[in-house]
Amino acid sequence: AEVKASVRKGIEKGVQFITITSDVEGTERLCYVGWDHYRGGKVAGRLMKWMVGPGGRAVVILGSKKLRAHRKRLEGFSDTFWAGDSNNEIITVLENDDDSEHSKLLINDLFTKTQNIRGLFLGGAGVEGVCSALKKLEIDQNIKVICFDRVASHIQYCREGIIDIVIDQEPFE
Image (tube, rainbow, N blue to C red; front, side, top):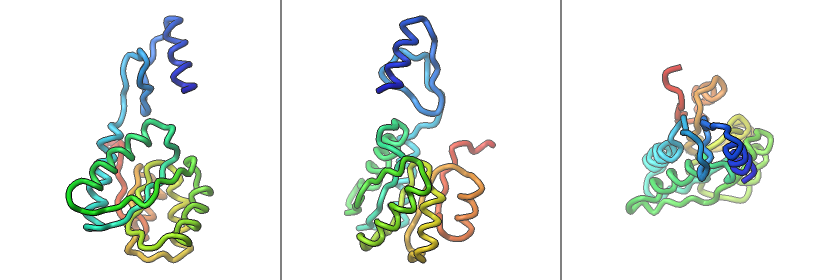
């Protein structure tokens, strides 16, 4: 809400805005340049559905539901993961403030209290904390993990078998 208000004030003063990476809807910005987060969430949902099979139970971890990009990823994931006769379940949606240390705490608490988790969809940052906690807890390798951003640490966790799929937002780099 604060960002939207700031953009509107700037536009009222004649400043032209182009939003990049994360859009600010409901403003008179010139355009948005970036990833289609809803479609990225749909891709993740389709892949997770395929990996966990019918009746699969997944947990979603976002940085914040306040971020449009994260809400759109969740919406796309949910629309696809629940589609059809799969009886799949999103157990919970957690927020980690895009922080790895917070992610570790969430994973430790989650796996202490929750059984039969088959998948983790990581829709924001904090991936390293999730993977570190899974590794430390020696969680069953049948947990499927999907995240975004092809960075060195995510690739390493793929090699270690902790992350199953990394959805890259910049395939030409």
